[in-house]
Length: 131
Image (tube, rainbow, N blue to C red; front, side):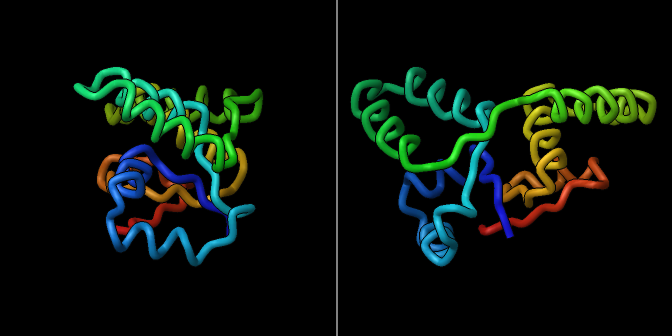
């Protein structure tokens, strides 16, 4: 099984949260991914922190070790369909989260997130919570 790790779980990993670290250690590197959206969110967190240089060094070092999936045409198609459906239902989520979900569904990967309630609005999305 292949996993896309959401930003919140990446942060738990970077903070050495035991459960997340143990779970990630059990999965081979070729099955662990994140998205370019999460990459952006993690970098923003470092730039927005009170210890910019220290956090950037830690974040950039980690991000070199993880597979990054881009937002491609298939994900864009999924995004457009999902956003239209959620809008009709009056159940929108943020565009960045919807882009992450669209990349997951386009690649048929599992999203690992602690934000289950939020992402559960997308029926085709497979979700796990490692917290």
